Length: 189
Image 1 (cartoon, one colour):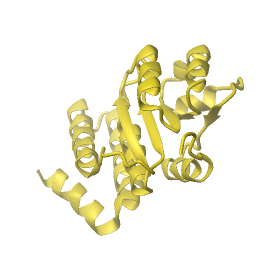
Image 2: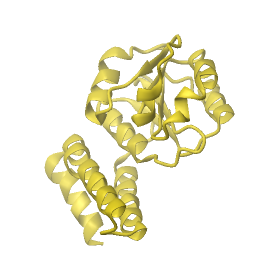
Image 3: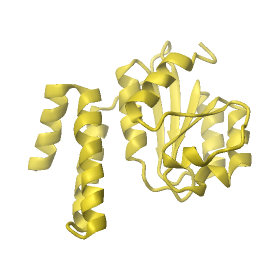
């Protein structure tokens, strides 16, 4: 309860962007380091992750507006780390975007189906696993036929081959959102 109250207070006091970039992300990095060193257990990491996800979801609005740019966000198959997607979604919403978050481990065909249904201005895929994108460039390229695809997370740094309408985002989340907000023009606006 104290953790959720602290997260809520951070957003109220500092605003969404600062709370995400200056409180939530550093806390996740720290708990990951403490877990890796054995100082904390999986329980601690899961409790923090769940509390952050709950706060992000509570602050999110999934009510699209006709004039807003729309982003579809997903993690590719076998990628379980979807907190960065939730954070990016909230930061984009703060900038006036509508977002649709499919979440963790979304099958390639399901992402393609969502692109056909939602018809977003951009598709954002995030992954930490090194081969998540590099080994699946054909699938990523097929998605890019429906909307420009932006790859984020550590896996995006492993993409060496150029694919039309597939772009790599900066690793820093705030920088990635700023980049998207300035370069991703509406495709159907």
